[in-house]
Image 1 (cartoon, rainbow, N blue to C red):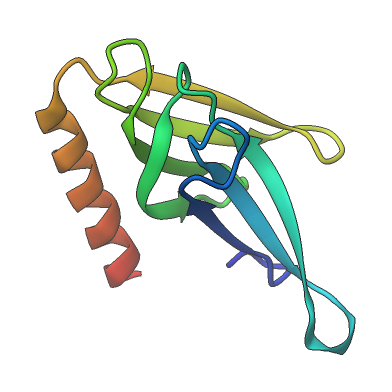
Image 2 (cartoon, rainbow, N blue to C red; image 1 turned 30 degrees about the horizontal axis):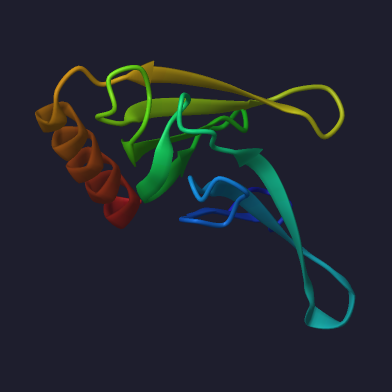
Length: 114
C-alpha cells in the first residue's frame, strides 16, 4: 500500500493475450475501489506474474513473471511511474529457471517481513 492508500497487485490471464496484468486499486467514495490496469504483459516482456510486488519509496514496483521474456523463462521487472498516469516497464529476462525461483523466494520473504 502506498501513502495514498492505493493497493497494487498482479493477475494472471487478465488481458487480451492471457499473459497477465499489473493493477492498482484506489480507494473511492462509499468504500468502493477503482481498478486500473497499469501494465498488460505481452509475452515478450513477461507472462504470468507470480509472487508479491515490492513498492519502493519512489513509487517503483518490482516483481517477476513465471514465463515469457527473451528466453521464455520469465522476467524480473521494474514498473516506474511517469508524469500523469503513465508507467514504464523495464524487464530483464532470466536465462534459466533457477533464477526465477530465487527471485520469488526473495520477494516473498521481503513482503512477509515488512
